[in-house]
Image (cartoon, rainbow, N blue to C red; front, side, top):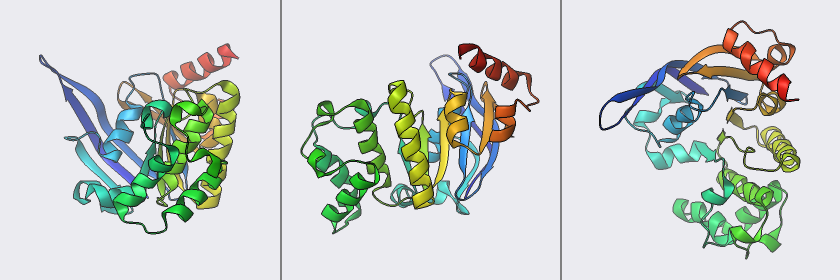
Length: 247
């Protein structure tokens, strides 16, 4: 489904170039929930931004369903891949109603049955038509994230990129959104690539996990091995110890 080979990426400043990603190689299977975990600045979100086309000028190869994303027009790529961002308030236009927010991707693609698509997307995320005339500031953080997820799935993509989708939410709401994502994954047979700094979140949803440090992957482990502490790299052990020390 997703094949990343020798992905490297530098950011240039006025005085120097900084390497953000170094020789990243991953294979994510169709229908898999795959996690990227590591501290802030480790390069997790940069991988998603390369996939989504937000970062240009990277080196290496990225393929989705056997097709190079470098050779895929952005509109065609968006048919297959959508992204859910960390901050739902920042991701939704504050002056657009929920109806307009959900109708925009349909209008761009020239979809005729907008009302049916919008109603289905809202139902899929546990909302109803009463939310359509509201603005983002008139609903809760968890509801905003549900709207953001509805916008991501409304065009029936096969892949969702999840960039810390619960970190801006209250703890009680985090569990609701994780359970929603798990349900959508099963019902729509989606492939997830999920970024988080929280091992508990990753273990809840992801079947395999890549541990990142300083722009590199230091270890790829299964969820079971992660939970049981069967890891080999010292940095992964540090993350586990830190996670347990906060409980």
